[in-house]
Length: 433
Image (tube, rainbow, N blue to C red; front, side, top):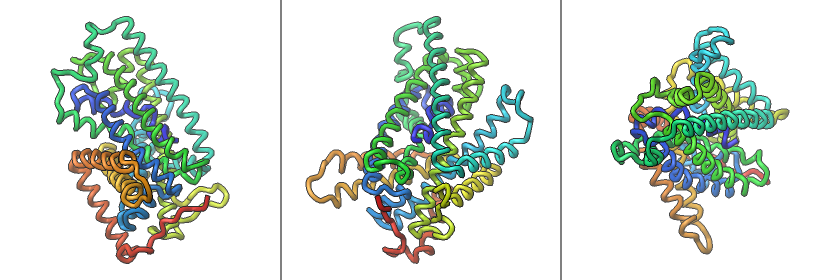
């Protein structure tokens, strides 16, 4: 589920944009972002061990810091998951409309019709429960793994036939003295962190997994590590085969052009189709995550319990929340753009990252009884917090403005709902084992 939430093909849609911002140092930004996310992943895993609750960051921050802080981080994560679903709906619709191969077998319809179709498709699949979602994810992951393997084979074949002019060319993706700039590298890294957005959703599935106190931590950390290593190999191969002096015809689909460059039109279309399928899996995972989070907040009283805190007795899922998030994605997909959605996604995610690192520090260092591990209990969450804060500050202005407005709305609603965030007004309960 973690690999699908992030997508094995996660760096491909971002490749051209990060390449442009970081002046070619894509693999470097991906690796730096992996280290940054590792600290936060450890905090998420440790907090999931302490609180195996569906509410995730909402529970962690609310129990360890203050109900108001818990409400705000839960509010942010709910928006993060809904926006993730929203941009998947938009991207899938655009992919169907713009792909020439799909245009030959599918009816030519307006993009708005495809937005409605994909929003309904995600909702239909998730209404059939976690086992259906898990089975679909296994199928999607298998197909994406096959296509990534085909791309690697084509890239290796191209390098064996054409190779690099000099051995130094194999180092250029990591560091090119002609174009390297620390400021640009930081800008590229803030975008490259999108490669890992979604791993925090694993913690919301604590009530579905066996032995959550152990497996959520392992799944969260391993998802970040595996994604980082796989993504690094993907972008490294793409950088080696694409001439540095040759501009991309389109930054958003740059990786597809790399595939077409080494494998021809068939590989171009195959990678495009794979990214469409990857967005299907990511959208399904994001919708399930947001539905589970809203259920946890409704069960705790932060949202109306009669609407959000209800489980379908047959499918054992919060069906009302699935339908609600699908409706929000449908409406947002018709009126918002992909770029704006991606910016808001980043802002909401980093608010959650800041909250979970602070909660881990408070629980394992400030309030811990007995001997403390200075590295795991203090240094790791503090580094995670500071790194996320630096990246959050360097996000683009529209994301910070509209994200701040969303947080303000949450504060106003939360204050009214909980009568001033009084202690005891919201329950951050841990369900029975």
